Image (cartoon, rainbow, N blue to C red):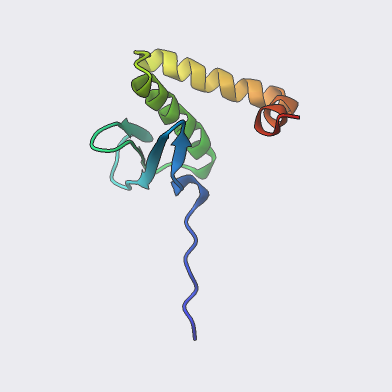
Length: 104
C-alpha cells in the first residue's frame, strides 16, 4: 500500500514579496502568534493559534517584512493598525478584494 503524501497547510507555503521569497514555518513552542525575521533569510514563524487567526497573523508579519525590506520604520502599533484596517476594508468590501486580486 502506497503512503499518502501529507499536504502542506496553505499557510506554510512560501510568500513572494517583490523579489523576495519569505519562508513560513510553524514553531509550536513560540509564545507569540507570529514573528518576522530578516536575517539570515526572510522568515515568518507562526506560533500555536486558532486557524481563524492565521491569515491575520500572516498579514501582520508581512507588513513587518515590508517595513523592514523597504526601510519604512513602522512601529508595532502602526503595523497593528494597518493589519486591522486592511482586513476590515476587505471584509466590508468583498468586491474590492476581487478587483485587487483579479484586476477586474
